[in-house]
Image: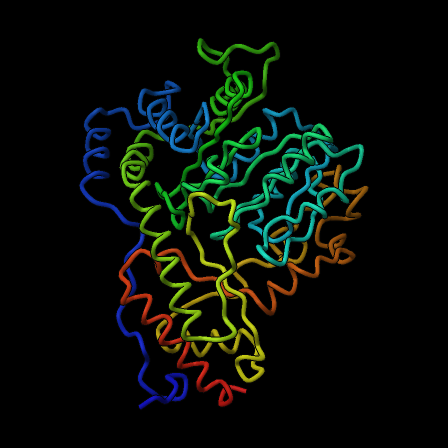
Length: 416
């Protein structure tokens, strides 16, 4: 009866987990209001809905200004441009993240410089940041990864000492707080994604937070094709911008998502705590990464766990995940791998010439000489990622996940 499903036994979980994304009459009302208004696009900019959403989103995170934009990739590019990053400037990024964290620099013909991550959190290692600074360094992009947060105390201190811009990549961390300060409000900019998998979603979309009047004006101009209009014309130069406006229909969905953000943040934090407690009480060798005590409001996107092969009869993490998927629980291992090793980061110097000095013919070629041992060990051996919907249901869902993990552990020797 306890036979592994991989070998023909009965799987632990046969019903789907909570559907994603989540919505109810709040989203429906906002969308119908936008539909009936017949104003569906993002122009004229900013619309009343864009202003209202930006105000509410910024206020929740403790920032002065919030500006919606097309997605969470372009928000990073916009922030770099607004900060004055130019061709050849270096931007320090963690290697263990989604490619947008680094590709934003490449698309401006700037140069991403990869650093390793801390073993305790898998977030950017401040010591690595300090070691990577050169006279060309102009910005740092820390990433709040999964359910974790970068050590912002040290990052901000380093940035202040060296005169560097800080752009927080908050694509995973809507609602989180560090020592009472919301993510995205501590650096010069905060960049958020509202892509389909994110804690707040409109299918696609993004937002930029900032506290500086000039930065706000430049962001607004860059989003709206470089226009300088009343309310965002308080700077001297004429910027060369993009059309990165977010549509009214997407903002309508986000208004509903904003209505639920506080309750969802609290519930997911409670479910993460329950999952951690239940997992650690029933399974050895798979542990949720500890939350830094300076985190004062827990966000919970992907849940990050560390796998210890020795506690599972020496099997590789990927074999464990294969057996777990057969039990009806689909977790991930190589959700991220170091950016200098992924084929889609094929940024070449014949297209982006500023890369040549550091990377030769391109990122992938130059990346062969990079070593980030903590990130590589996490990516290929240790990291287990639990997907975003799994904390959105009931405690019974969590119990099933832990039951399946414990079952695989009991039979781990059979998987060798």
